[in-house]
Image (tube, rainbow, N blue to C red; front, side, top):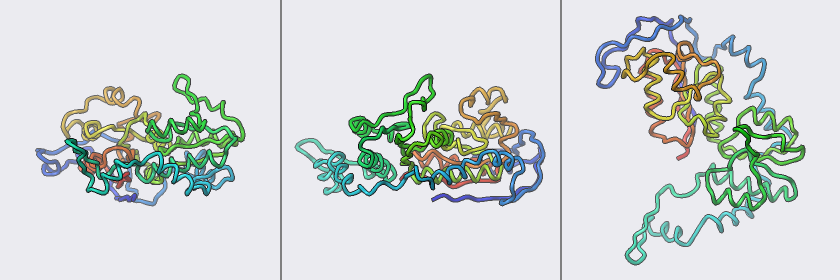
Amino acid sequence: MAMSLHLCRFPSRTDLAVPPDALAGGAGALRCRKQPPFSLRCSGEASPSSAAVEAEFDPKVFRHNLTRSKNYNRKGFGHKEEIDKLMDREYTSDVIKTLKENGYEYTWGNVTVKLADAYGFCWGVERAVQIAYEARRQFPEEKIWLTNEIIHNPTVNRRLEEMEVETIPLEEGQKQFHVVDKGDVVVLPAFGAAVEEMRILSERNVQIVDTTCPWVTKVWNVVEKHKKGDYTSIIHGKYGHEETVATSSFAKKYIVVKNMKEATYVCDYILGGQLDGSSSTREAFMEKFKLAVSKGFDPDKDLIKVGVANQTTMLKGETEEIGKIPVLTPKSIYISANCFLV
């Protein structure tokens, strides 16, 4: 479930301070790093600068149109019953069945085995694998490509290789989309695909089979809201992970933080080093996050208004804690609840 809280804020003051009790264990006032002043603007008002960018290319509109094209499918092909039987054979066992029937714990001889309550694929992953398997059943003769591994599971990926489903090759870190011909089938993985990749595939007139987890697309919607309000998205994730690459492609301005330590560093920079002193100069900031920020990112201008989003495979508890940090800073006026795979 994705939720958002929009707040209005009055013009910034460089001498604005946070009460001593605003931070656990903190003492004294926190003075903010000097920022350009800006006027009051509440939720729902459009940003002129954002409108100019949207007029050129709107990722959300593009994806909306793509999902309604004749060459796009994200619901499967009617072979669910057949594929479910295949998946039951391949991904279940008598051992697992015994454990589940005995309270997730069973003893064989002198060995006791315990099974995690959350064992197995989540719903989004099951759905992705099922649709990918259905694609081969639906297109028995066509060339089928994957933009990335469908999920990070060796058994599933090996099975797709046996079905002659290939991954688009990489050269020097770049996907070689020229190998994909008109009429080929391209499967987008559970983690999603970047907008530019979808755009290229659409122009090549291929059949797109989209297995993106619906929880991932909910995060994309959150990032879209950030962009419309001219907020910078703080994305809890790994900047090189397929899902975060896809999510950031829907953002106008973003920074990716891997963990609580990096998030705290960002917030400390916003407060001019008075949160915990972990941040340093602008140059040090940009060096630290040089691979994890949007093009042209300026920490002195782009951290005035922020929103939080997440890579759904990150730890839920850590994302929730990160989401609380900006609330403590006088610069934040937009905080987003997040989507998780639980």
